[in-house]
Image (cartoon, helix red, strand yellow):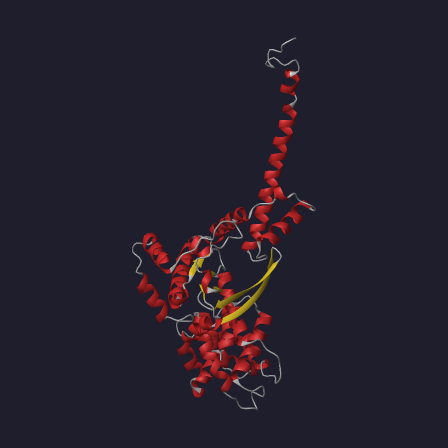
Length: 398
């Protein structure tokens, strides 16, 4: 038997040694193509989730795959949830810079404050606030354990916190479950998921990694903050947060009483001040839906009428001091003068002074919204909806 010197004794070994080369090249090229495709899908899915076009990993990567490949994609070419999450973090580092680190610490402090308020429900911090995978608009996720949803909401009511209760029906593995979520309105959005008290030691699995969810108790979060930020006086920071309430809660507290403040029917046939304010907000939103400061001025321009009807501008600005920007304050301060602009009764010097401000056009627009927001029977946004609209603008553009 002829022995091929390169083949090691098999008569056809030389053929076997040569044949795989093109296969290896093909396999290598295919692998490179598959890897590139996977990275492209990962990038597109992460981009969609970072900019809030999609909220679920499954939908994000499948939409990205269809857009890139124009057809069916092998499951092996789809990136994992963990890969997409890491790519989202790349977007966060690129677009948010140092603000992301500052926000993460503040979110953990808000989480700790909320957990302490709900201590008897054995809260656990989970999700991006604990793992550090936050991005602009991320919320704070907490698990709380109670056999009574009402017990949890009563605890929130005692602290005068604003919240919504949502019951979500989920079907998985042929079984249907109802999850109860409580959405808190705070400096950052907080989502409480309420589980039965006997599940406090249950090991929940992550939808991203398939592994046990990383979570922290109050004591674990406190220890983590002490280790990560040795010079941080946690209790002092939390006290400062309590002394300085969430500005949107303050806005709601100033606006709610306006429902009982009636106006002269000759000038305000629509009725109470709150109804008028919501009409003005809706009209302002139609004009400049992206302008947080302008929308705040529209919503808050008459809050002083619930404090001092004889000087509603001055009393309103005093109540809002430190909680609104200089631009919002300026729009509120001069919104009555703007009526003189529309009437043609303002003095030349006063008009020139207002025109010199870069927000002059918005001032005139606010006045127009103020005049048009006096229609009886018009359907408006709810107060909470208006406040959340502006709050979300702050998350997006801060």
